[in-house]
Length: 446
Image (cartoon, rainbow, N blue to C red; front, side, top):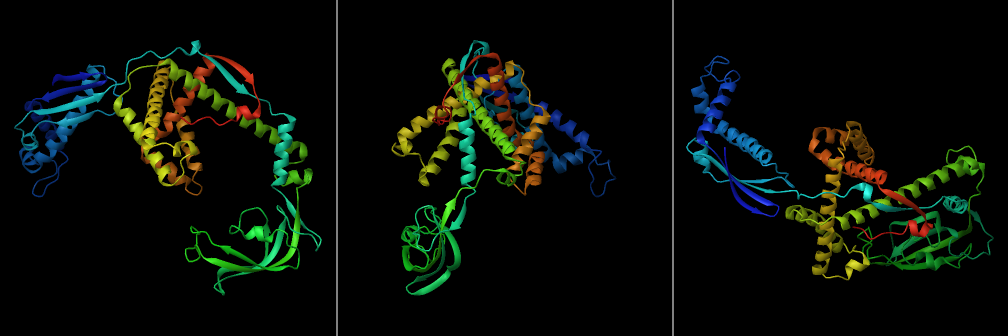
């Protein structure tokens, strides 16, 4: 194998590789010899097909395999000999004439282009100084959570006949909807309970029932939204002949042992303990998320090096595709919606660069610390992924079993979290107690 350096520009390297035709011929002969005992052809006893006949019948096809294997093996050897660390899969471009190659009349020549991981020394985690935001799950927070739980278990009791319905009351109604005087499918119900202010009915319907009382009969006039799910009703005006049977007042559930039993708990004390544990888990999760963000911000500031252009482009492409999708759906956040495409592209390219830089830093720190992902951890990740697809768990597990390459997508987050654990363990971390608002304040996503 002959290797010739073509270009070296920053992290981009190109090499020209040549393998003599005689080497290909030797590999072809060896491969045919290995096949002789396995080839079965009409007119020949099993294992007795002459090598010359195999060459005549399948030579070009076998040479194609030889060429592919030779390119794979020699490119790997080049990377090893040159001690190169590819940032992405190297690209290979054949220079030889394909026909002459397969007929054995030309050397195998190809160009290998590779983008390298930059050389840099990651920061020592022991030198980092970090602040961990935290708070306690106090009695007030637990009481608020229990009150919210009770609010979600509201019951409704019949009010006096003279009581007028107001927001948050429920009305028990019969109704029949008509368009141009004709009733339509799905437009009639009897004894339906509707909570005023819930927004569950067509816009304007609930408002017109505010102030009504038991025994009232009224025509509720509404217009179906243009994007209504039933296309035959979208945008049309309708009149609902409505009778109010009852007005019902909301009552929060009483927090007692009977209430706790609805959640499978023995008594109020057990319910309080469960809610406290849940609150503490949420606090710890949010505290870690904030600390991880602080770690990433610090690592980003402390590392400056050239980035592999193709890695940045790939990351930016993924981000930009999502941004364009959100833009077309009208789902960009308020700040981004005001920006031009040029400004958006500039901003998100910076985000792509940050993500690539941090990915390389975390990978290097993990490598230096010899962090490994165990089979048990990977299996648990597959199980967690499968649980997100209820009823299809087995199919998801089988998918990962049959597609080992897809496991890389599950391996990366585990590796990242273990590096973050290492940093937290070795860095100087100071706890700072803050308010709930500060701890749960939403950060700008990067």
